[in-house]
Image (cartoon, rainbow, N blue to C red; front, side, top):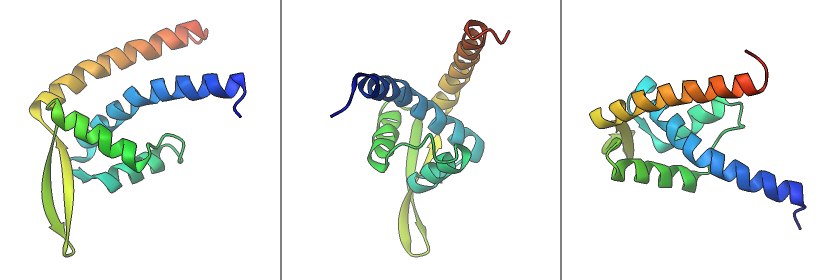
Amino acid sequence: MLNRKEKALKKLRKEFRSGLYSYLVLLLLEKDGELHGYAIRKRLEELSNGRVVPSEGALYDILKSLKKIGLVQDEWVEVGGRPRKYYSLTGFGREVLDELKGEIREIIQVVERIEGRW
């Protein structure tokens, strides 16, 4: 059974990471262009030393959600005789991401002020 601290951390991490994962996926697609789901997951794993990686199911739910609201598009491509679904940012996705980047910078500044780093 989870103690109070573990319950609190689990809840807050879930809330925090759900939006963060979407943002990170958009950033990766902006930087790397087209990627398939497994490659997105591997890049997040590499860049975060395995600390910020959504489960496979969560990642595909995120990609489906981002596609539904028009931020990403997908395309089936055959690679080595295997079909793979590649994702890329849409023009609308780039617009939204640009606004989110500004908001993230503001959030980082607020956090640093609160922690006394500024």
